[in-house]
Amino acid sequence: MPRRPAARLTASFAATAMLALPAAAQQPTIWDLLTVERIYNILVQNMIVTARGVAEITYADLDLRPLAGRMAVAGLSVSPYDQDRYPGCTITADRAVLVTAPLDQIEISSLDIDLVGMRVPATCLDEPDRDGFAELGLEAVELDRATIRADYTVATGALVLDVDVISPGLGRLQGSFDFDYFAVDFENEEPVMDLAGGTLAFTDDGLWARISSEMPPFLSDPVMLEQMLAAQILPLGVIEQPAPAPQPTEPAPAPQPTEPQPAPAPAPAPATKQGEVPNLEIARAAVSDMAEAVAAFAADPGRISVTLSPDTPVRLTEEMFETPSRLLIALQPTFDTGLPAAPEPLATEDGDLIAAALDGGEVSGADRLRLAAALLTGTGVPRDTRTGLALLDPLIASGDPDALALALDHADALPPATAYAAARAAA
Image (cartoon, rainbow, N blue to C red; front, side, top):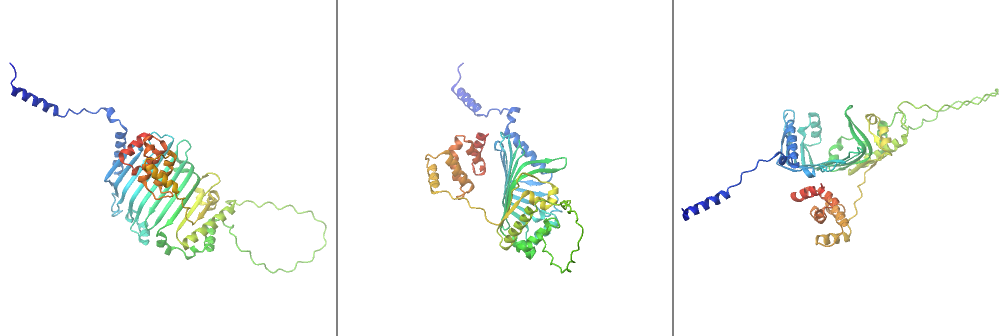
C-alpha cells in the first residue's frame, strides 16, 4: 500500500531532525592526552598546588606556551599563612613571566624571570628588618620591573647571569656576571663558581637621600675614606705610615785600629709571614680607586659601578671573602662614577630603510634584523616594539632562525597566534 503524502512529509521531518542531532562525542584515547600542551599544563598545575602548601597563591590569568617554554601569570598575589608573624603581608605582581629554553634545545639551559609592577610590603620581613625600613620611611618596596636572565651551557658548565631591577624612588641595580664554570657541591652544600668577569652598577633615584643622614661625614672625603678602607682591608703592618722624626744621637767614638775581620755574611732574605699577601700594590690601587669613586658618589649621587677583570677565572671561596685583600688582588676591580656611553643613533639612511621595509620595498634580511633589534631594544632609537616586529614579519614567515629567536625574545608583544607559530617554527 503506497504511503500517504502526510506520512512521507512526517518521515522527512523526522530524518531531518535526526541529522541535526550532534553526533556522540568520541572518548579521547591515551594518545590524544599525551600532547606537549596537556603535559605542560599538568606540570604547571602541580607546581601551583604544591606552592600553595607554603603560601596562599591566587592569580587572575595564566598563559602557557609550552613549545616556547613560556609561562605568564597576571594579577599574581602571594600571602604567607602565618599572618600573626607577618601581619598584612601580601606580595603582588601585575605580571610575572617565566621563560625557559625551547624544548628542542639541549646544549643550552636558560631561565628568564620578568616581574612587572611588583610590591613587597615591609610586613613581609622579620621585625628587625622592618625597623630598618621604618627608619628609611618605607612601607613597601615597589619594583617597576625586575628581570633575571641565566644562560647555562650544559657541556662546559659556563653560566652568564644578568640582573636588572628598577625601583621608583630608590634606584636601579644592574649586574652582569660571566662564570667560566658553575655548579653546586651537594656534599658541602655550597656553589662552585669560577668567575671570569662581571659588572655591577647602581643608579640613584632617591635611596641615597634616605640613608645619607646615617652615613659618617668623612664619606665624601677621599683621603680619609682611603685611610679607613685601607685599615679595614689591607693586612696589618702594610699600611704606609709616616716615617718617625729622627732622634739626636751622640757622636760616634773614633775608630780604633783592629785586626782585619772577614767579610760579613749576606743577610738572609726576610721570611714570609704566615697570612702575608703578595702583590699588595694591586690591592692598594683598588682601595684608592674605591675610595675615590665612593667619595665622588657621596658628594654628588648619580651612578657608581664596579668592573671585575681577573686575568684568569677565579674560583670564589669562603676563605677569599674572609681576606678582602686577596679578593681584590684576584678580581682586580675598577670603580667608576661616570654614565655609560650612549649608543650611536641610527643614521638617516636607516630611517629610509625602515620606511621602505614597511612599504613593502626590497630590504635585505641583514638590515631587517639589525634595524628590528635596535627598535625592539631602544638602542640608538626610541623603542618601538610594533615596528620592530613588523620588520621581522617576512623573515618569520620564511622561517629565518635569527628572526624567530629575536621575535621570541619579545614574545609578550606578539599576538598569541603569531607567538605560537613562531615557537613551532623555531622548534
